[in-house]
Image (cartoon, rainbow, N blue to C red):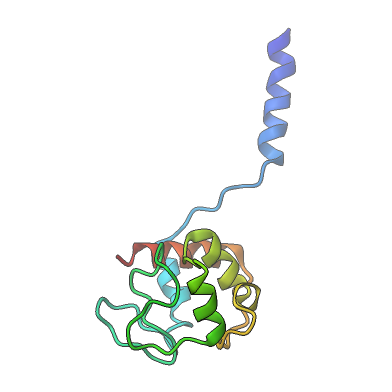
Length: 126
């Protein structure tokens, strides 16, 4: 008898839980194409309007040689800002949420799947 009660409850719990969205590196590369206007991602690649993003995941902010960061980002970097997945997720959704006076002119990614895929792609660039 207890099994009959637990099984429907377990099914309901699974249905109510948010579905984990798989990350797709190839799809993330396509999402990154909109970033290419300002950023490169090649190992030893040049900075553009924005810094080169190769290996950025897990790195301290504001550390790319030869790139002139905004005063706001430099201050946050001195305070320990790191481009971990949580910070990237917030930044890529709304850059001004993380760096309010930053110079990045990008409104942000609104689709959760695109965000997941882009972070997977950035994470794979080591």
